[in-house]
Amino acid sequence: MVLHKGDLRVLSESPYNAEPPDIAELIQYPITPIPLIYARNHALTVHVENEREPNIDTYKLKIDGEHVEENEFNLKDTILSFPRKEVVAALNCAGNRRAKMAEKTQRDPEGLMWSEATISNVRWAGLSLCDLLIFSGVSTEIDKWENKHVCFASHAVACEQDSYFGASIPLAKAMDEKGDVILAYEMNGESLTPEHGFPLRVVVPGFSGARWVKTVDSLTISHDESPCFYQRRDYKVLPDNVTSQDMADSQDWWSRVPAMQAVALNSVIAKVEDITLPGLSRDNTVLVKATGYAVSSERITQVDITADEGKTWVPTRITYQEGRWSWALWEGDVNVDRDVSDVDFERGGSKQYGAVQVMRVVQCR
Ligand SMILES: Nc1nc2c(c(=O)[nH]1)N[C@H]1C(S)=C(S)[C@@H](COP(=O)(O)O)O[C@H]1N2
Ligand SMILES: [Mo]
Image (cartoon, rainbow, N blue to C red):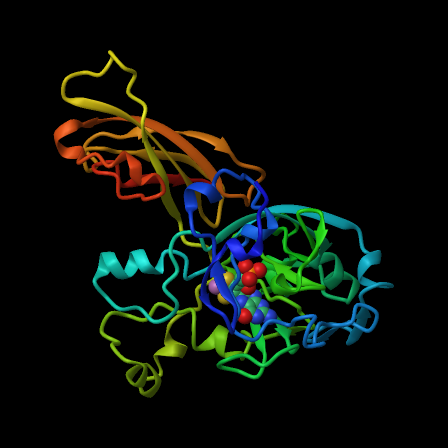
């Protein structure tokens, strides 16, 4: 089957926001093919057509701030001269499953109604951010990193809520060699597409997609988080009693609540099939196979499923996982009572299969 970008379900044309229409199809690919990578933009995409795509020959990455030598790197001569590092990591939008959250909580959260496919598992390649920071003079002593942040920014196009897109991560995450933060110029062995951040984007394994700044053009080491709207006044879970934007603003809830950084632990049933062998069906049960994905800020070690609302749990098999930051694909078989299952096998991609539900997911460091 040939995949096209046009195969995505478009939530908005401009800015371009789109996700794969079918998670059962999405999880057939351990590494997400480029046309199936969701697109999340707060700004008009930098398109070749409108000639705003950064020119690779003149593209520069600026670095400044505390304890670094202010510098401007050009892509070809400097950035590409650092060792190439590959990382398989799941890119997960903080808005993934918002539609499900709205349904379950009966609340009306703000934002686009993403379904469950705002996730992509990609083989990224680029230079290690920590190599670049050390080269720029950042100390390798742990105590020098405390309470500092690396602020990323992209000024290529103005955003809906701010004049640029920016985000930050703790300097300690950036400097941790095992944190695997890279500035990527490749995805799945190809150069980045304009939608996904050509020519250089931040990849922060284990952190929410909002921090993976695309078309990044500046890095600042600072005592404060990025001042950008998207770090300070968005991507925060406000308490239940804060019921309106006005209230959040006037009572300054935005500075009282921490920014969402780590990817939330999550597991999704993508498909449920009846695999009862003819003649082996016990009277009152059917055997079903459930498949899905799980994601977290750390490595997933186990996913269990239940068909009796949590009274008993069945461990699943993890069928794909690569390194510490990829998603885990899993499959498991479970017997379901015929009378509670309300069988609807034809619904394939739908996760609402009768009684097979809750996932118990375990992770470890
Ligand atoms: N420059 C820029 N970078 C950005 C964004 C953006 O709007 N502009 N959106 C962020 C969000 S919210 C997500 S989830 C990811 C989406 O990356 P993708 O479009 O490659 O899937 O990019 C992040 N980086
Ligand atoms: Mo996002």
